[in-house]
Image (cartoon, rainbow, N blue to C red; front, side, top):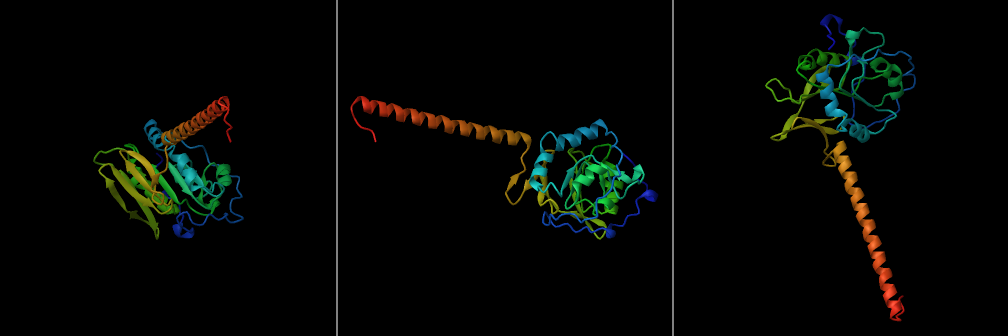
Length: 271
């Protein structure tokens, strides 16, 4: 991980950028004039195998990332990415960039993000609404320390940490929201013996730690955002239902045709 010393932190006042983010409310078109840059950030550094496995396991293969993108919608003005550079302004040194495991930003310009190959706060005109980091033994101290300071300094509204381990130093699940430039805790409470839950106003979703796995829970619909295996099971069940209904319809039609044939043999008109 890249270290950020106190002397080299970006001189970027959180108060200089609007940080009020209604929960999935306004999805307005970003202001004209913001997003005319051809600057490209360098490629992200290679993650350690441990870090790569943790973030990948919790977001990509199980479908969490896809489900979150689908739930949030507004792809023209919404960014949902992981492991891409985040920095306050162009051309800052590498020590003033971070690569969050998950970044969510509303009312921004995804096309500009692609052009810059990362999220530049000064170019987008606002900081991300949410950042989430997956802790590991090698990143735990940074996630709770200097990364937290970095995200606060550039104005990230919500900062979440998720730890799938259960050792004595595990944070398990922690959420914070930025209040006057300082992170304040968001409530995280047990739902059951194996489930912790914290509500994210930015996403209008609950983040749940369930037996070491991250799940997104929709309170309004009282259901989880589906994983790939759950979507596959739903599609399989729908296909079976459709096939069963089609088979029953064919059987009904066959019985009707057999009945009509029998009545004709007996000289009975069938109307």
